[in-house]
Each structure stands twice: as structure tokens, then as C-alpha cells.
Length: 257
Image (cartoon, helix red, strand yellow):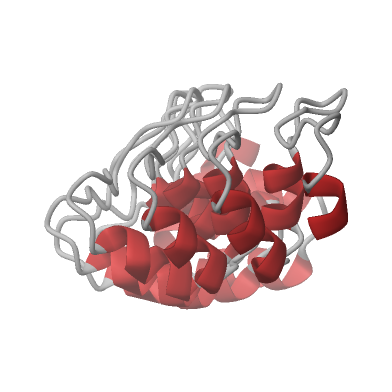
């Protein structure tokens, strides 16, 4: 790299077909020495987005390269909260992949919004919940500027994503909050319990059934209850759990008649 960078016919900032510059590639692959070398040049643009709108900083955050993230944050012309073409910020990517170290660095900055919506209306908390990143969820829930119950464009809140994905640990964290609705339906009328039942997540179903503020027999917009979803896909354990609730069983029997 040093030999190549000494040549006058080498463009240190030239992107490939995907718009990735040498700095983006070095950042994404965790080559801290190369990143330092490139950042020392005046002709390298440290905030240049690729075809997907991702900057070198976004790549570093996505892959959890703490040292490189610190280096880039030391550059005055790097935007730590710049969204890509999908509206995903570096914090959003770090949250999704569970990089707590990067997340702490970003949460310590005033120029980073920890609750920014992407194009689908999902927040960093929503992504972390969907992917089961309990440590990240815990960090974000400590923030007063993070709404733990914000629905996305389809009406799914973080709790709904955690339930649909079967992440019972994350579900417990969210249910421990007084400002999270455990029975909020999305745009299709499905509640967290309905999603958990439809995917056969019996541990999540059990946790939700322990709550008095969860209706075990709520139909969605198509008229299907959690029991109906579990039955159609043959999830025996979930069906047993739901049949153990009198308020679910009676309605089911009434509908059959």
C-alpha cells in the first residue's frame, strides 16, 4: 500500500463498481493499519458513500471494528449518523449485529440519534429485538430518548419483533418496562402472542400467557386467533399452552360449533 500510494498515477480514492473506496474496503475488513495510512492522506475522502449509501464509518460500525470506529470519529469530516439508502444509520447496523462496543461509542455522542427510523420505520431497538441482541436492547432501554414501544411502518413494535423471532430473553427485558404494550396489534391485527404462536415459539407464548393484560384469543384482521395459527401449522406445544387457558378454549369451542 505504501509503495502504491507513492505513485502519482494511483487514485487513493477511486471506487470499484459497487462504489466502495479503498478506505471502505479496509474499514469493512478491519485493517486498522491501512485505515490509518489512508486517513493520513489529503486526497482520501473519509465520508464518501458507496452505491448503497454506506460510508466507511457505516461499514466499520456494521462489522464491529471498535478501533477503526474510534479512528474515524477522530476525523472532523466524518458523519457518525449518516443514513444509507435504506435509512439505516451506523448505530442501526451496530445494533442489529450486536456490537455493544461500537454502540457505546455512538451513544456517547450528541450528534447521534439512538431512535432514528429507517425507511421501513424500524429503529435500532427494533432491529436489535428482531435479532435477539439482548445486550444491545439493554443499552438502548437505558436511554430516555429511545421509545421502547414504537411501531414500524407495518405496525410491529420491538416486542412484536422479539416475539415473532422467538427471542424470549429480549421479550423479558421489554416486558419489564411499564411503557411497553404486550398486546398491541400490528397493521394486520396480529399481536405479539399471535406472531409467537404462528412461528411455534412456545417459550415466548408461555411468557405472554402469564400476563393478565394479554388476550389469548384475539383475532387478527383475517379472523385467525393465536390458537388458529398454532393449529394450522401443527405446533403441538403451543396448542397445549393455549388450550390450558379457559378464555382461549371456550371461544375456540364456540367457533367450532
